[in-house]
Image 1 (tube, rainbow, N blue to C red):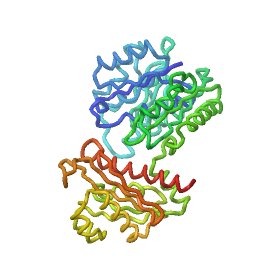
Image 2 (image 1 turned 90 degrees about the vertical axis):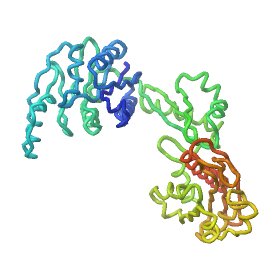
Image 3 (image 1 turned 60 degrees about the vertical axis):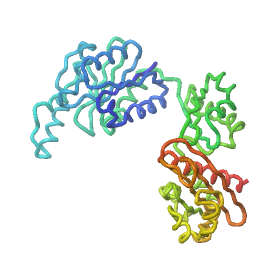
Image 4 (image 1 turned 180 degrees about the vertical axis):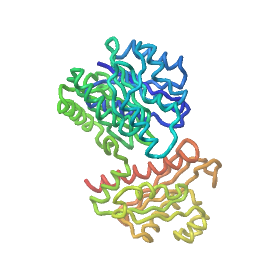
Length: 415
């Protein structure tokens, strides 16, 4: 079996809202072993919606459609599908009662076009929408299952969970479970990761491997099938062991975990605290960890010193050092980190100084960044980097590099 998901709505094509419905539905279908081969987004145009439905009918056995079931003229999903299904639309009494009751309870006038939301196909299995007005529907036509769901995520999820997924399990012999894990790496590029795993990627069958580039990091998705959920999980685990044997030194976590969360956990485990001295990053490094639960156990704070005067008066960077080396220098970064460590009483301190852009500064091109890491008298590190991109991207890359450096320091200290 294979499924296709079609989202109807011009607002999706305009980027006014994200198509999170397709992502969530795909995840749920994968859990029951039904692969999704196509995602399709189509605007509110009758010809294009009907064309999308006809294309889906030719290539997919299960078609799940979200959106276009509302009361307005541009809600045309039912009409477009009706031309293919050759079934009359009739008013569902239970749905109509719910719609009428809503307006009565809220003392609102109900316009006539709201009756449109209660229309269902003559031979449909009607799915009661407890979160909204328009019901969902399941219609089987010439061997293809059509599922119609509202576009509002809370309504769609209720109908999928309560009705659609159980119906799919009951209707189809779904023996093959699908499980995925997204492994996350930092300190290695996508091309290098792929080179380390080239033979595994070239010969992949089950599981499959897919490297994915990120902002300053790389992901590797492992996807496996099995006759049971346990078998699929075991297939993923076996491949994960092989991957870790080769590139485990770059691995920091899986799925939804972030590098900031991993660093927080390492700090907590080692009973260490962190602070920062920030210039071009403007506090973004420390903000990322403060945003996490449990930050008060590991975070001492930050000193944001954007100007040379602030570096002198707040951090105690000597004027003579700035005169000799400038604020964008290894010497300044080292002193910022060391002095901030004393002032914040942090076990580990990072400093960031550089040029985010758009203009050059002190003879340095935009993207030039110095990062220092200081751990008392035990460890000291400073390095210069050059990050491409605009001002915001340079600042984000600097923060991510800071977490990469802190991650490797904590790993080294842990070993």
